[in-house]
Length: 318
Ligand code: R5P
Image (cartoon, rainbow, N blue to C red; front, side, top):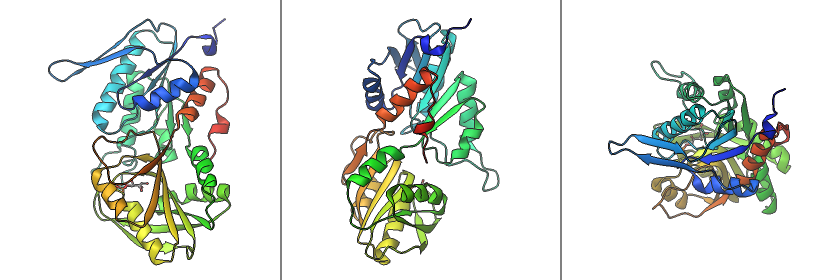
């Protein structure tokens, strides 16, 4: 009879992108991160070596694919390859932020679908399952032919947002793509809902074309999966202010903030940006305080459940 995976040894490794989150996950699980050396050859190529035997183990490898996404991905592939060749029983790629996800369809001629390409490469490297958080589009799960557990940061956000006790809250999606998620948040918070119709002029310029809803005298909570240049959030905030919003906050799962983005926020009507720690804050940027909520416990809980072959259903709410 085969040994159940829960009886196999649990091993948790972290890539170099988000070690702070990996440590929070391991602290929640109550097990230190396992040892892996990640170095570079003089010509720039990466080298990975796992410090002890993982033969027959249930292995989780944590890597957000951001900041330098190409490097982060290559490092993830190399780690998975090393784990597969070291005879791990099962390898789960834990990807708190799954990059290259915005190119998820062919919406112009002669463009790639990078979300699909990356999914194929993760599988080709040897991952047996994927655990990720707030994908840009839930359908990206379908680019994988291995099991994908798709968590949502919503329990973490909802707890924080309820604690703010805003007098007159309303949930707004800053673009039409986020309406379904915003609708779920509005139900959880017992508020109304609105949305902004936007048009992207360039990689960093966004125009808010219209707003549907009523924010007059209301405390707006904008919900989005990610922000980078903050063009989407700020364009939406400006139109919401014009429509009479009293206060405006934004909650985004993944904050790939740039200096220009922080400066944009500082000059905007957005009083608070709330994000998770799925993406590490870039070093050397400042000018706008960001409230960071940890998803360490959420991901740690999911890892334990997957390891013990328990349902992760209750973590999937959205
Ligand atoms: C777009 O569909 C996403 O949900 C975000 O709204 C967008 O990626 C944010 O990017 P930026 O902050 O650069 O406007």
